[in-house]
Length: 291
Image 1: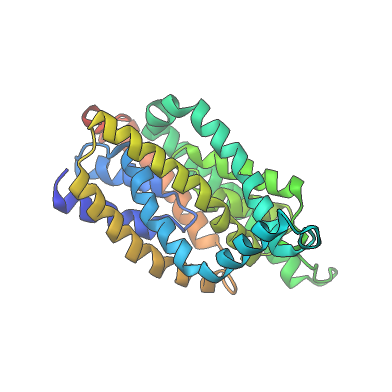
Image 2 (image 1 turned 45 degrees about the vertical axis):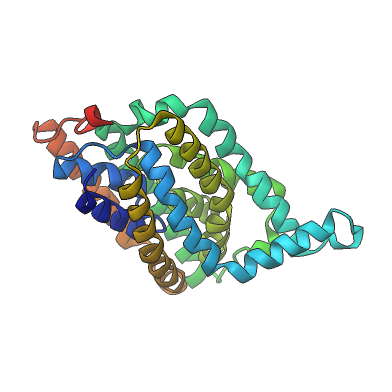
């Protein structure tokens, strides 16, 4: 991998990780369109450490408060009803599905799941799901001629059952094209949560999953020697700085704006990808031979 490739891929990772359009799909597509080798699941997992570092810094006060309350609740029974202590447990519980499924389907994630036809399908299908979820949220928030405004749930109302559903939604993002934030935010909106609550829990839930995946891939790559370390680290640093700017913008965006621009983008990109593969312009396995 060249330095230019690592710069572009780091930029793409930072720009797309927190938006509901799938960073893994865009890394895969960037390489395919440019005629580069597929950067691979290991590169994706390692560069995601950079974007998750941005989450750690952006939500540092929330994270410190949750860890502190959760730690104290282990020995202090009076703390177990505290919202932050409960959030600590809910993040742990919500992380179980992606941990189990990630290990179970590791070979598929690194191989068949990276087929461009599958990515095109998930871009379109999850785009439609996000559109439906966004529409339902907008209807509750605005009410209507014969409908009162419906109060949506906040994170204080998050239950173990809802935490697990969020977790399974996050696990769907193991398939490139689904989008971690897109799947979890869609799930949250469909369960009746506010946009801000769904996005905040989505980002907090991603921290243990992404960091664990990144560390696992770091260990695997170190032993296998199949990663270009200097360019990968450079891409991770780029992803961190760009990702921090994007998450700050996105958290402000969702408080007043609809997700429909992302829905339209996903569907158009998915259709375009099908057309290009169908016309033979792109192979569904473009770039895979390089690993």
